[in-house]
Length: 583
Ligand SMILES: Cc1cc2nc3c(=O)[nH]c(=O)nc-3n(C[C@H](O)[C@H](O)[C@H](O)COP(=O)(O)OP(=O)(O)OC[C@H]3O[C@@H](n4cnc5c(N)ncnc54)[C@H](O)[C@@H]3O)c2cc1C
Image 1 (cartoon, rainbow, N blue to C red):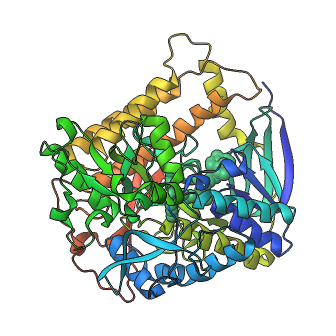
Image 2: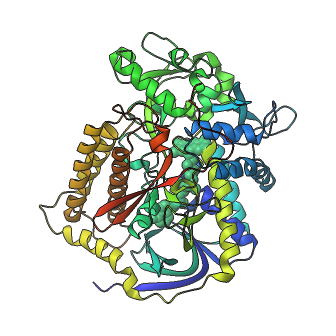
Image 3: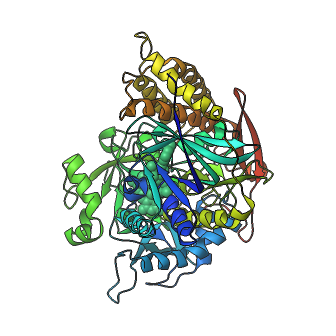
């Protein structure tokens, strides 16, 4: 089948309409730049809209706070793998960003005096760990929803051109610089080539590689996988965060705000077991620690009825707090579990939540081509698909919303600043060949009744990653995981879809997404096998200690032919020397 390419030309193209993409778009639109935003989802369905708990910024509205304490907590929470220059920049900018959002009209929850309300969140402390501090700014438990609506309205007001339900398949590079993207129009199956001077990727996370996850179906790491495929390395992919409070067996998130408001995790005996592990921060210790403690309790036979879950107890908070501060998540519990959180305990287990790794950038959101700091001309990344790195080995709650806004806006600013030096390149139709070949292969396999369905492969990938590359990891398990993923990389070449139509063919896109996830699983498991230490979200039972002498550095992993090539980048340390992480 001959494939028609429709061409478009814009000075700037943004892929992704979550918080990061929209803030970048707003910044460019304000400067009058001719831009397009491409998104595979309708913009307000982006995962940012699911963020519940809040956005961290040291406003100090309820008690003393400072951006420097916020920076300290972020570095310590990240087990000292954060680049501290970027963290300082983010924590300073956070304050102004939240105020800008307020001025854009975001309806934050308020204190009685009318200031933006703030609440506690895991790992956020006063004066370098003395005790918890109220730093998370929130709009009930719908903070992300409000951010997304506010930014989307801002973009509409400034006439930003959106290409909704355009699924980006490839980045077009020429002589090491980004010059465009290839997209598949979901409604018609038509292919579109966007020629541009600069591209921002803001495509979000990749949690769908695990079987239990809080992530929406669309979080398949497309941007990261496309970058990898174009010779750009990925950074720190072995660090994946498991959030302690996912609804049992479903993974649906119950925000940390539940514990911020006073919720307690209990084992079979009803014991508040975090007392034994982190006596200062208790249930509000960072997520990697609470998740491991839950696994530990379960292994020791103290899961509920000996099973693989524990309880989240909100019964003592009272209906008023639940209704006012946690209305959405309590409703989830009623809907999905048939339980009443005001009177009954909630079964929970750790759920795959957040990719600390991603496309490497510096603190100006410009993408790095190599560990030595060389940049890719015309290419920017921000939000969960990027690794700045401000979360290091473990992200603190509320720090992703800060990250997507600060660095999304920064990506817009950097691209605007670079525009006079960037140019178009004439792109040959053949640049689309690789992506077209993949689509055609899936279509051709549909005629083969013996080919495996893609759903089967997806299940196997998720199980392998969850069981062998999850909260606890070992050399043996990771090797087995890599064998299984290697096998899936072969089998997906021959896998089949059922639907070959052009109109709204979501199945063919699911096949492409799975292809992306398998490649990212490969990089994640290979990085985890290589890193022989335990730090933040990466825990090796055979190397249970953090090893700064060998491993205080970032992993860079690039695709070379049919292999992965690893290198390391030093961590930037400015004011906080690595110490033991006690809470
Ligand atoms: C349930 C839940 C609750 C959370 N709560 C909080 C919280 O309270 N505080 C906090 O700080 N963080 C929270 N997080 C994390 C945070 O919400 C996310 O990390 C963040 O919103 C990611 O924003 P983003 O802009 O990078 O990507 P997203 O909002 O995920 O948007 C990605 C965009 O990319 C587009 N896209 C992706 N692939 C393609 C493609 N191939 N072609 C075209 N478009 C594409 C999508 O259409 C979408 O518009 C939560 C996450 C979850 C899952």
